[in-house]
Length: 105
Image (cartoon, rainbow, N blue to C red; front, side, top):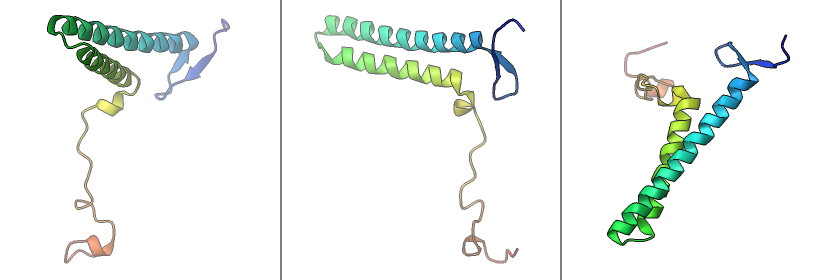
């Protein structure tokens, strides 16, 4: 072995420590870019419209939110995947009281 510790990910694939560092730096960069774009975009709009500090704060909030959403999409892909809608309680009876008439088990 070359001295690099490997660990298993969720799919059973072996990942190196370098891959984890890559993911961490990518997430940090994404958050920083969202923060900077939101901050400077809000300041630019504030200067043009004379609304300081409101658009700066709104831009900052939108930038940070977009950054976090992007990071979550990268780290937890199943969270934003297009899945079938979950079954509601009405579609799947839980107790005898909830079962439709004429259905026995």
